[in-house]
Length: 102
Image 1 (cartoon, rainbow, N blue to C red):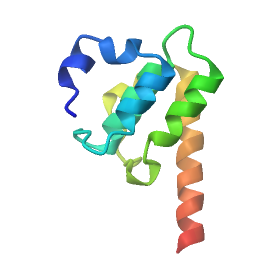
Image 2: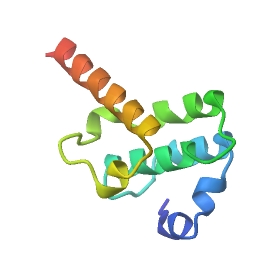
Image 3: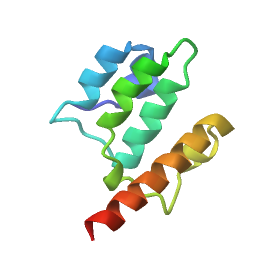
Image 4: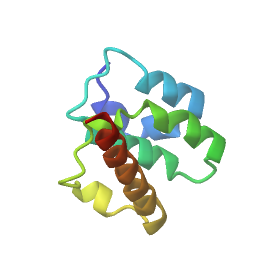
């Protein structure tokens, strides 16, 4: 599954939680990087009307150990402060999890 058109026209971000989750769960999802998946998930989550329940359904589908936190993209840097705190918290969790595994 290749998403550039749905990202460009914004239709990807209009999906409900169940539909967006189905997209992210596709084995054949083609993306530049897992960081792009995180960006798209956060952009989806930042839309008005998103519920905490919906966000909790979507975010576990991001493969956080594959997200590079060393070089945040411009899109992630532009996120509202509330979502930036979320990314920071997730990054700390990924770091702690990796320490437990080593």
